[in-house]
Image (cartoon, rainbow, N blue to C red; front, side, top):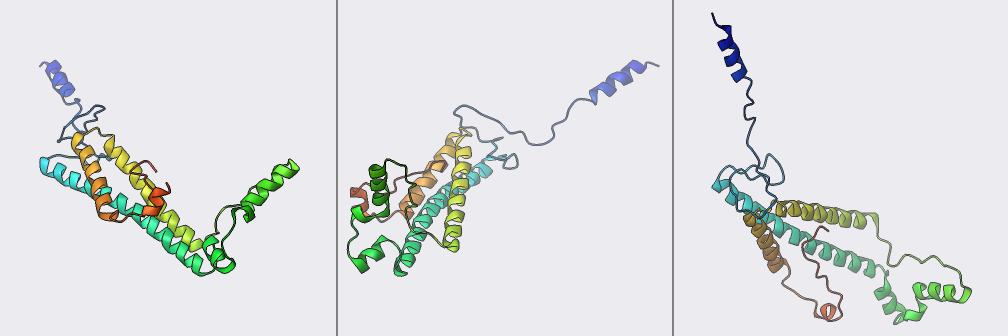
Length: 200
């Protein structure tokens, strides 16, 4: 009895079997649909329908990112209005004491003292101290926007033309919906926030 054949069959059973869906990792521009993985191995595209749905999700994330940016500005205005109503900030001081001169600010006085004495004077914190609740709310929105911007950057790094287009469409659609008003004075003064989608 030839046991060599059994050994050969036994060797055939040692061949590695596929352990699950395969993610195609592309480092060049591509238009691949199936076997594309978006950020996570579990987000594996196995059909055209799943790919279209995934593109819609990416568009939604782009819109959400623009909403977060708008929410940050809205929250800042709300906090500033509340603090101003409490008599804090330069706007409140100007209403009580008249216009604030640039030569009477703490920043100017510290710089003037440094010039006269020749010594380095620590610069005071500029702005109004925020209460804990306001700082916490701003930090949560900022952290969420940073996380989402990095996540969309990873989607971009799939180099998939359709996913890149979905990211751009989402950002453009969100900007169209949530940036329907313009502060003309701020734009002319060069102080408008024109930061688009970036890492943070």
